[in-house]
Length: 287
Ligand SMILES: NC(=O)c1ccc[n+]([C@@H]2O[C@H](COP(=O)([O-])OP(=O)(O)OC[C@H]3O[C@@H](n4cnc5c(N)ncnc54)[C@H](OP(=O)(O)O)[C@@H]3O)[C@@H](O)[C@H]2O)c1
Image 1: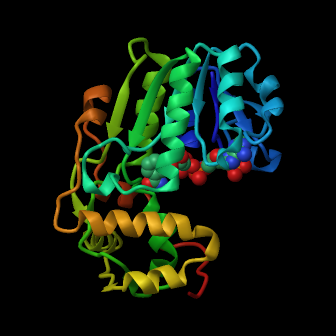
Image 2 (image 1 turned 90 degrees about the vertical axis):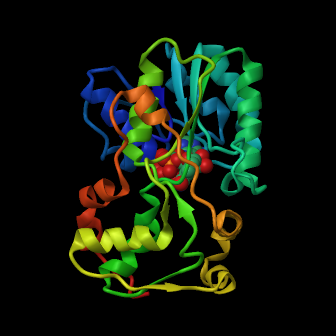
């Protein structure tokens, strides 16, 4: 079994679930220093999704691949071809771009890339399972942890926009099931957390968990866009369009996580409790 994106949020969590279950796992990494943080019983093989020929060693004797794609789109077709010459089965981390809820229906380059990779996988002849998580709960770390660690005010657009944050560990547990169990070929799974929460409510829950109120202030979308680094503009535009489109509506919530795992999905409060130290300890950029 080959796990790509092994040093990222979901890939790393998938590796933890698989190694805890005693499954033999190979991890694809492109920087050896990043692999040091992976469990010691994982086989590490280097390779880069932008250089399809570099994947051959990682694919040797592999039957199943977990594919995470955050690389540029140009090499997607030759990489999927290469996977199909070795593996019989692929589980692909996509997004809910087919779900008829306004939050997921805003055209954006990432959705287009996911759709294209799904098309390539369908044409490849491999058995496939498509995993479509909504907002990751862990986005809160990227978005708010630095400000909260510094004791500052969270200034953020569309505070009333509701999402149903899904815990990375629940996404990983579902991925691991689909990698290890039969019966998921052709599966197309939209994964969400259990409840619809506005962004301001999510910040408030983090404050509850930390035992101190966190002030949330509405930020104009244009100010949010202006503050974003140039490189993250496409992602920022995607988020602003999605939040804007979902204003006034509850988030889309599915029962797929409990249906597959047989256990309730973790709530955002649970996620925040388990990650509380990330909001209290560590560096603060001063922004
Ligand atoms: N964030 C959300 O709320 C959300 C929701 C739904 C779906 N998604 C989807 O989830 C995916 C991202 O998952 P994630 O958050 O787990 O990723 P992540 O934490 O950003 O990690 C990306 C992983 O991909 C690896 N990678 C990047 N470029 C590579 C390349 N050229 N060759 C080999 N490996 C490469 C990275 O390796 P390095 O460590 O070497 O960089 C890292 O392991 C995206 O496709 C996104 O659309 C995200």
